[in-house]
Image (cartoon, rainbow, N blue to C red; front, side, top):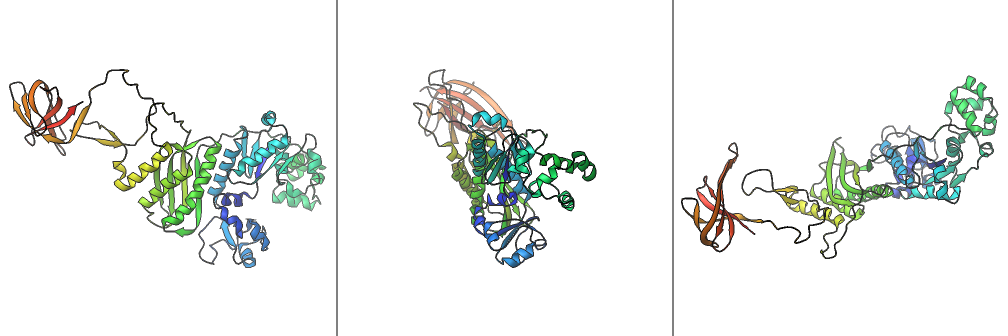
Amino acid sequence: MAFVRVHDLALASLLRVEPELALHALAVLDVAPDLARGDALPPGYGAARVIACTAAARALGVAVGQRGHQARAIAPDLRLRGVSDELLRRARAALLDAVATIGARLAPAPSGVWVDAAELSGMYDSEASLGAALTEAPRRVGLPVSVGIAGNLGVAAVAARREGVTVIPAGEEGRYLGPLGLEALPLSEALRAELRRFGITRVAELAQLPLDAAGLRLGEEAARAVRLARGEDDRPLVPHALPMRFEEGVDLEWEVQTVEPLLFVTRRVLDALVARLTCRGLGVSGMVLSLDLVTRVTDERALPLATPTRDVPTLFALVRAALEKQSPPDAVRALRITALPRPLRATQLGLFDPPGPTPDRLALTLARLAALVGDDRVGAPSAPDTHRPHAAAVTPFDPPRTPRTPAGAEARPLALHVYRPPRDIEVVLGERGPVEVRSSEVRGRVVACSGPWRVAGAWWAETYAHEGYDIELEDGGLYLIAYDPLDARWRMDGAYE
């Protein structure tokens, strides 16, 4: 088994979306995040304890376990952040996506993920090479990790506490664990304090305790600890299904009221989102932009794409167009982007067809047009289900996915070229309908006529009615004409081509 462990998960989950904080003195406290207010600490930050800090903070004397006010007294310019459950959840999901590129049988853990290394033994020349691959994959999503490989889950998790890759050969689990202190084992503070009361400070000393007596005296956790100290762990690996929800975001340290600061953090959020999708071989077919406002209201905006893509500049420009079209109604305290995943669609070009627009740029063009003329005026034309003359609608544009029928493969039907607006005409009527048509553009005798087709509707709103005729003139032209009884006039609606 292999265990991939993230160092200081609370800090790593923050730095993967705000990497510039790694260069500053920063400490993470065991309290929910809150907005900073100048130099004053948010409520609860002073009494909270430091659970992780950057190298710059450690150089100033900040250490894990200090109170927030103690750390700020040591380093007045220290930045304090609370633990965000959403950032932790997203970091764990990103770790699963990254490790999934190496192995299929995975099981999540609070600070990492277990991997079935046995099924991967034939793909790498050594366990050290497998560990190097497991170390490199999470770095693509911004998570520094260490890897432990051993014969069972428990020992692999202990081995992963060391930096780099640690491989424990079969049968040497006890020898490896013996010199370690009790801090290396995942024990509760109560059990660790009880063992110290008995003078046990090393794993080797714990392994010498009688298993049954330890369980009767100290409980079930002590029995499991004794077995782990001996290098034994019979827990099976229960594979975990990979989640299909891809969401990334950031909690802003200060309230943001303009668009430019939002765009500054949006690019990083999109980078993290695309990195996860790349690990799974998926693209973005649409996005949902969520802005958490200071009024405790969420402003959500759907951003569709014409085709799946992983091009970050295109996605960024789409978000920018949405924010510039309509600014947030109030100050923003958090930003989230949820991607709708879909496999990338291959584009096959024809030998004789001209190249069309680049699919991943099409959504950006449509978004810019919608910002200029409105969402209801951009798309593909369609005929609505109504008999109202000249009715038309616009539907979301979707490029065709099937090849066009070659020319000459079947008979070409007639197409109606609709005039907008219709042309006014004069009509001479006979016993069976129109016999002559006169207008500034068309004039001639009717040699064939079919109709009338009487249509009327919408009496409850804007009423419409007309009597339509298909006619053929003596010069061979085919036209659609109609009489409007409401306006008492004839019109030419279009020509057949």
